[in-house]
Image (cartoon, rainbow, N blue to C red; front, side, top):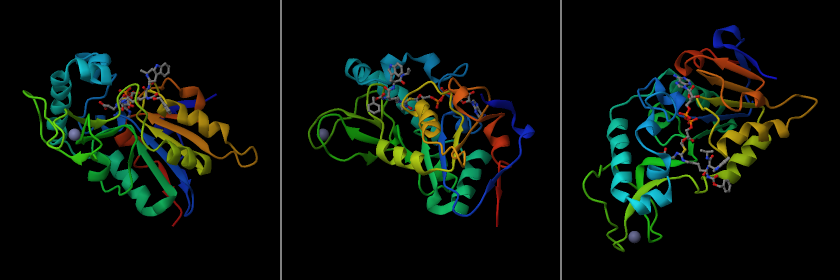
Length: 252
Ligand code: BV8
Ligand code: ZN
């Protein structure tokens, strides 16, 4: 059963050189930067049905609506800045180097803007497009499309946002499974635990727990108990921008 309470009620986590840390972030880590989450009141999905804007079927049905949805988000992401939670994870990477595995469900670039060098965007990236028809590689694309659907200059097919929609297979699943298998600490920040397979990663971490060492320890940081709260040893509640900066104690 999880221990649940305000973040300040918990001790900082000791991080030694060589500690292997797995961090999964969700929309909640970007909330204090002003990026709308999906499920909170007034969130992204309240204006649109998932089926219409975040599925291949929705794109086939109305690509202009989908491009308006993603273009609004592209516009917004150009105006936001990383918050102390993103900065805390960039500092963790500077201390741990390759022993930190950071995977995000977010398609915004805020981890990179905060200084994180190695970020796995398992659901793709907002500022990247790809062709829906030919196999040309995805390419950086900050343009917004409100009127017309952009077409591929190589084959004439529709371009689409290079994100992973419902029903599509997330990126990096093998690397993620390997990182879960070897981590000492599993941390999720700002995710409601309602979208799979990401919401199931903590259960995978529990399944590989070493009974002697109790590793990996599993911790959640977020505003409220997530749907998968019972799989965490601790749920440290509060805004990520306040709970994350004092969370780690680095053994220098
Ligand atoms: C797949 C990219 C097969 C696009 C996204 C029935 C049961 C179980 C699963 C399924 C099912 N039916 C279908 C499925 C599978 C489906 C799924 O999970 N559906 C759900 C709705 C039930 N999943 C899929 O289709 C996935 N693909 O399964 O393929 C497969 C899988 C593996 C191997 C082989 C085959 C693909 C899912 C990806 C969809 N794409 N995004 C885009 O961004 O537009 S999902 C999108 O929603 C995000 O990427 C993210 O993953 C998710 C939102 O979740 P959160 O990040 O958690 O955000 P949310 O708003 O929900 O929560 C925010 C949290 O932050 C809250 O808890 C809040 O309290 C907290 N918070 C708020 N403010 C703060 C804060 N925390 C801290 N500080 C704050 N200040
Ligand atoms: Zn093409």
